[in-house]
Image 1 (spheres, rainbow, N blue to C red):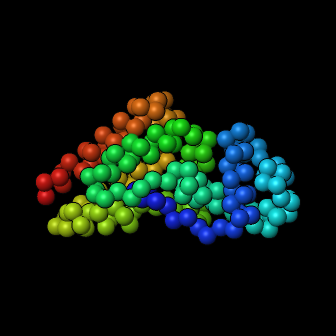
Image 2: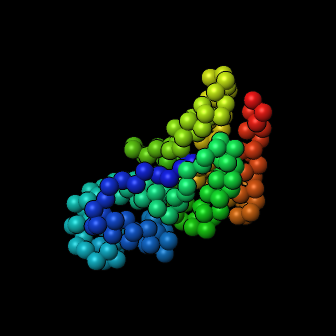
Amino acid sequence: MTGPAAVPALSGTQESILAAYTELIEELGSDDVSYRVIARRAGIAERTVFRNYPTRVDLLLATAAWIEATLFAREESRSIFDIPLAIREAMERYDARPELAHVVAETAMRGVSGASPSPGREQLERLLDAEAPALDPARRRAIVAALSHLDSVGTWVTLRREFGMDRRDIADAAAWAAEAVLDGIRHT
């Protein structure tokens, strides 16, 4: 994601539920948290959690969106060439809160209905239109696809789990890859 996530309009109760669940995820993991425990942490009745989030999928989607919009939020990039730095910073934020990063990634990777797999795509397209308007459509699409993929919590999970990379190496690799994607259009 390359800009601030759209924060869904939430009631105070919903915000309390999502904040409580987020805290519990960091303490216990996402699979071990019952609605009863969430309700206790939020200081509300268990049925209130069910009324707001009738299914586990509803709760997971809302929580992932809230985490992205609040805890993993970032400022919007002003230039397409600022994206590598934004990606580096995002990877460092994910690494600082790995349990939450995994929840956000799993929501997107599982293809849960309602999860946005590429929330920053529109901004990338706008930045490219402004800074490389002559780019042919196929190359533009390839750049947006590559940057969208690199600029995701899924990339962080892959580099962490599959390659065993540490925080610095993940941030370096993702930023370097983004720079490589943009090198071809730097002087166009």
